[in-house]
Image (cartoon, rainbow, N blue to C red; front, side, top):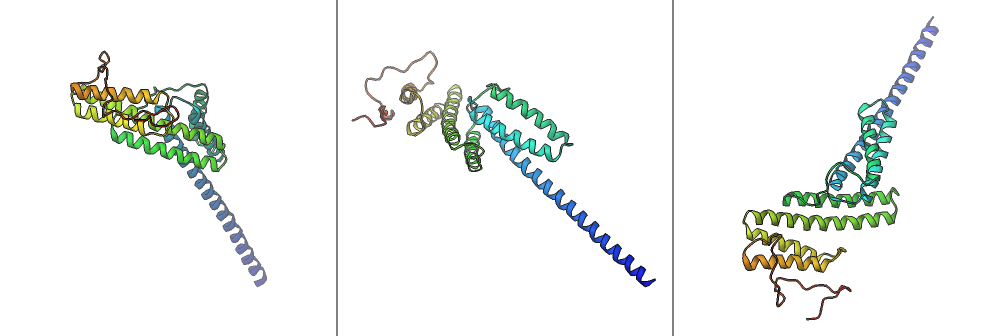
Length: 255
């Protein structure tokens, strides 16, 4: 009798151990799945944040399509882990449609490569820097090639410059319209100096620098805003406010 009882106890202990092991294994698998889902959500949210800014300011699609492809891949991985999750399923369908749209060179929102305030400009510039760091990660993980990485980073540098110039010009116009000639001239000067000192490639750079200098000099002479129908008077000598123009080979003209 005692042998039977002992055997029964042993069986119960073994069964308890097996059940505990299975339960523990399931718990670990669940935790691992939730951790993976959390990582995928974090990556998806990061890419979405980058895409929102790029869709606003970038009229090209190379970076947008690349990031959108990664977003779709993250959502597919999340869907494979949780196929019953309706939110993941809906997001995957929406972002897959968006990918097709971007590949066709279309988007739902207008492109406005400027910010309405200095704080918005600073935030946008910081985020473009984060996009650059994210592209470094993509290159290191072989999600994009080195050539693609370099081309996209070059594009980001141009976007930073465009955003800076356009924002200062936009703010200058706002200040000029409100009669604040001091801030009008300050923003024009900041735009001109940023372009003049930039190492990024910029088409017709010298002509654009001269245009901004002429607008600034006109406002200083007249204390008025340079209007669409007004033109600065012809300069008989270079103004001290006009930075030296670069020659095509990048050298400064001899003085």
